Amino acid sequence: MQIKITLHCPDCQSTKVKKNGKKISKKQNYLCKACGRQFIGDHALRYKGCHSSLTQKLLLMPVRGIGIRDIAEIEKISIKKVLSVLVYDPAKTGVL
Image 1: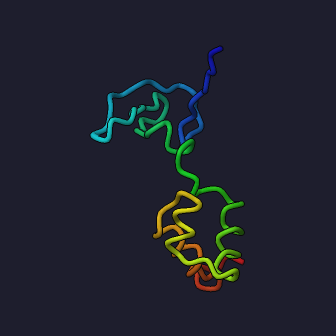
Image 2: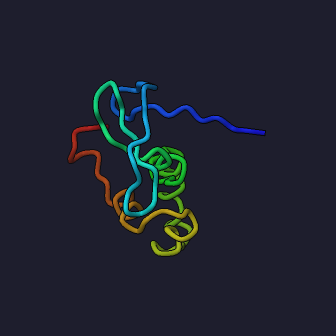
C-alpha cells in the first residue's frame, strides 16, 4: 500500500513543486515552480508547534503545575515555542 502526499507551496499554495536537493540536515528540499520559493516538505508533518489546538493545551498545563521543560518534552516542541505562547500578549499586537 502506497501513500501519496501532494505537496503545496507554503506561499502560493501551488502544487507545481519539484525536488531541489537536500539540506545539510538530510531533509528533502523543494522548489515551487510558480513562485520560486524553497521549502522543506516534511516540516508541517513533523513539527507540531504551529497547530492552534496546541496553544490551548500549552496555556492549561502550567495551571496544573507542569513546568516549561516538561511541557516541551511532552508535546515534542521547543522550549522557545512554549515560552512564546505563554508570554504572548494580544493587547500589544492589536489582535484580539
